[in-house]
Image 1: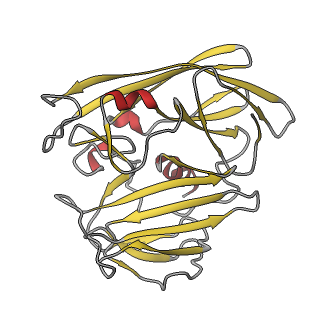
Image 2 (image 1 turned 30 degrees about the vertical axis):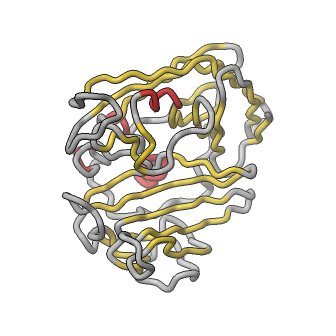
Amino acid sequence: MKYIAKDTLTAVEMDRGEVIEFELASGDVAKISLVTTDARVLRTTLKELKVPEEAARTDYSFSCILEVNGREHLLEREVSTQRSFYEPWEIDGVRIWFDAVDDIFEFLAEDHGVCRPSKHARFAFQDATKRICPELLHPWCPLPEGGLRIEQCYRGEDCWLGAYEGSQAHGGLDINHPKGTPLWAPLDIHDQYYFNSLAMGHNNNRWRGIHRWPDGSEWILQAHHMTELTVPEHTFISKGSQFASGAGVLSGYIDHSHFIFKVHDYGRVIPLDPWILFWQMYQDF
């Protein structure tokens, strides 16, 4: 399949042996093939993999070999260590966010949010001369000074795909902060609403906001554990405006907000690491 670099990043899932073409703004075309994928446990306190234990810890790594324009490149990541908050690769003019491999589900369950790729690996690609989107992002919440710290992700494990209770891939990014911490719109939100709420009889307040880009893609942003929504549902929210008070509802041992990022494009909705957004926020703010 051929993709043309847009003003926003392109989310792509690939099987081993699959080849795509990614056309850059210059007109050059990068030919990208997924050669191999792998994942392994680095350390765990579990007695048995995939069996949750209270406050258990599992750290792991995953990797792939990606062939770009005939040259092989090894991409490696770690989760849930500080290296979860990684820098993207830039290869032959393509910025590459290496998001996930299916291999991790040999030792993790998908019981804590949708996060498993539908193919062997998941990436986000962008022309390296472009940002992840054409406008500056406002912080979604007060940004921890010096960057995100893994210790501030619930009990130190709940980054994207982190092993909750040592056994469950975490389908979001948790950031610890007190009940009532303001949540702001990172960009204009064209529609937004609770899809779960205490008022509807659910055990949590879960919010979804949608931004529609001129290039045809949509970004779906979600925030969970919110104390309250401070604007009426299904109204426009301008970038930088407070729309909610975070944390405080079903937030367990440590008050935190849970952030989710999805890209709707090419007829598919693909979840991605919210760290990508926070990485850009740190660049912009």
